[in-house]
Image (cartoon, rainbow, N blue to C red):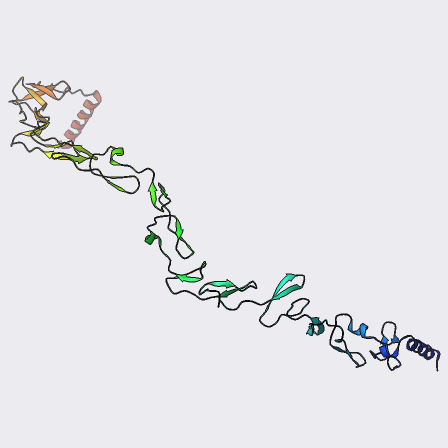
Length: 367
């Protein structure tokens, strides 16, 4: 036997003397193999393994060591009421219906996480039976909800009673604005008022600047009240007419002395006071016969003359007389002044030119 083998045998003997044989269990074969001992790999030293070193303090179930020995860790490890569960290949003691450290809840239960890998199992409500709810939803007690049904068309679910309800409308309540309860736990929005109006406590649009016929000073006719409403300010007495919301007595042709033409009646209308006979014209509401021209003899007026009825006419002169004016429209017929002959003055050059032309003609005509 070599010295090395002798040292190994001495170590094995020492271990056998120190550890009782009842605590020994094969874990891995020793080199050389030693019955009842396991090898501690880092030190390459063979020692027997124990129950506590294999099973620890929380493991459960059975293990097969490296020497193919079966070791039962369940006895005395899991507390009363706990069970040994395989979690990811590891056997762990779990309390029933808990979700701590990887343990699972019972089927149908829900794990409520509380952080740090901890949580608790919750049994949710799965039915609305016994709650009196026929529509809507209720909490299931585990962070979720349970649907209790729906309502027919035209109805809605009242959350306060859990029953179906027919809601009212703004029109049915006569509301013009604001918000009001629909009778089924919800709120109706009935709109807003125009900029000059406000919504009253009775859900009616009111206008703070509403006018009256009196405030406007109107005596008749229709008017706007300033709040999109219409005012009827009455009618006028017989013989009067409503003009610009006030009663007005129209004039007549006779009352103002007009005998012809068209005039205003003073109340927004017009009057036709007739026409004039032939040869007359209507001037200033009265018929007028325009004046004519004189005979045009010497000393009589001529030119553009007023006809006496607001118009103008042109009068000329006779017997070779001319109308002498002083820059105005009218003048006086006077004998005309004969026109003086126009003197002709020829320069010497022009005279010599004519003489040359005459001489040339004579030479051409000579034989």
